[in-house]
Structures are given as structure tokens and as C-alpha cells.
Image 1 (cartoon, rainbow, N blue to C red):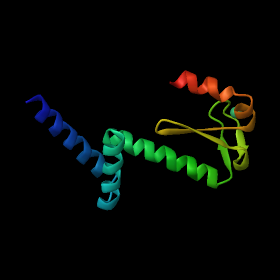
Image 2: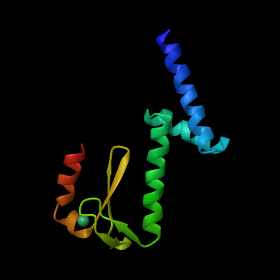
Image 3: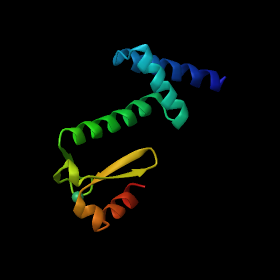
Length: 108
Ligand SMILES: [Zn+2]
């Protein structure tokens, strides 16, 4: 009984998010694929994909913000460090002085 209720809640949640963002079916199928492959909720899959795309957008447009010191730097100074499903971007200083490792330790 609980499983059916949870499945029903999950289906309702997905339908609600899908409608709220007017997600087209081909894109929805890809999000569902990521959701299942990464064992994420539908919303978390959208957030992870959106975060990645925003980072790519920021990189493409020339600047990024270091996730350790929050400074604004040129794209060519970016060092991308993958951690699990996420990727974090650090400046030359934070990367080469290993300050980024403390940042990653704090978030884990
Ligand atoms: Zn930095």
C-alpha cells in the first residue's frame, strides 16, 4: 500500500514539474533517463542538468566565478574538478595552492 502511494506521489510530482516548466516530451525522456541512471528524483535531475548547463554557459561567455574564493576570472583560468555527479570550478590560485581540496572536504 505504501509503495503504491509513494509511486502515485512520485508520478504526480513528475507531472507537476513537467507541466510547470512545459518540458517537451523528447527532453522529458532524456531527463527521465538521467533520473534513473543517476538514482535522482525528477527535480534533482533537472537541477543537476541545469547546474552543468549554466557552468558551460558561463565558461562559454568568457568568465566564471571560483567556487572557493568567489572571485571572477577569465575562462582560461578555470580548473574543473568532478566530484560525484557534480563539477566544481576553481581559479588558478585556489587550484594550484590546493585550497580547492578544503572546499571539497567541507561540502562532502
Ligand atoms: Zn579561487
